[in-house]
Image 1 (tube, helix red, strand yellow):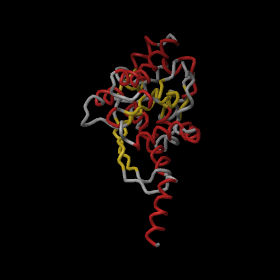
Image 2: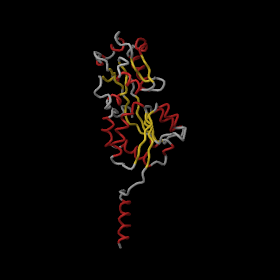
Image 3: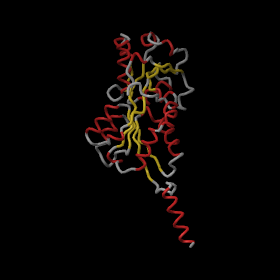
Image 4: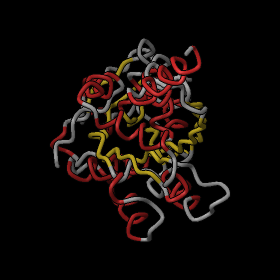
Length: 258
């Protein structure tokens, strides 16, 4: 009778979804501007999925999409700053179309940690004589670097501002250079500037949306993660209404374009 009750209890737990799941590891690849944001998402996800161990690889979107063709090193899930890159992976059958999830807009802000510089000055700041360097992510690999260039073009300031551009390997490196005072100002993705490492360091002012089309933060499961229950659970977590305030908190507002 005791054995019967034990078996019945175990079946009841399994049926209700409360039975302990086998530990699982999830490898997430994320672009540099989402480095601090991923830490927050990990913590919130772990509150409801304690059996999942998450490892994170930070690299540019171009590097992550290249890795998606190398099965030995491909993350199970990618957090990118370009919907186009995610759709290309889906078209090449290196990612799952039904997992593609738009997280929200990738916005840009003017950031400075140099005393006396008022980031609220806006356009005149980019051509001011006392501004000798403007940090940006390399436009060849960063959508935010390309956004910075297009914004200056719309302001008809590109000819002058471009001479001051200092491209860095990625957006996180550009932000770090401004924070260290190596560059006067930078055009930096908002998720970096609202993170704990930047929130109270220097000052920042949002770049007006009318000057650029936001980047798109997206998530997608690679074919490597096809059988990963943890990857599916993470996508479900990102899509949940209860996660929307978390995304806003880490600097990813709802997408302005569906």
